[in-house]
Image 1: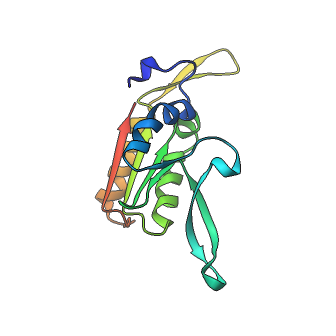
Image 2: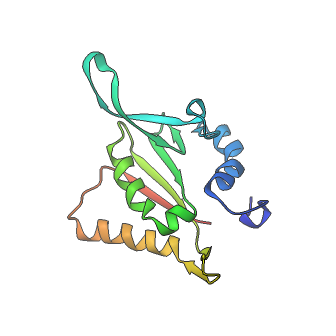
Image 3: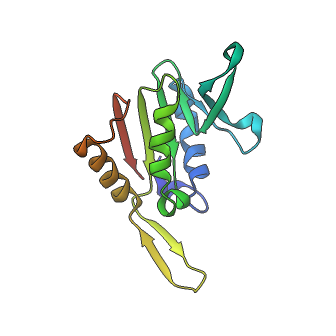
Length: 149
């Protein structure tokens, strides 16, 4: 599916909804809504009796392959969500791979009436390149896939 085919604003929810059928076919569990029952949570820390004491919500997960999927849009373009996604995914138990989807360009209508653009994909790519090139912050992933849409 092309992002041009999506109806309405290009939100992370809209992108995830468009990808969901294919992801389900591939064995992913995918967030289906905003209610607690619709969320996909994965454990980070465990307490007494082996019960999770800290869990994180993710957009999708393939448990057998150890893949966490995160789709970002406006907040991701403006609020450093890529940083948060990388750190949080690295703390989730048994995650081997991170798939991060970012808009190539996110257009923002400012309250002043001005319009601006954020190069979200490029900024996420630059951040990942810096992390891996510097080797100062080793990540536990076997791989990270960054997808621009």
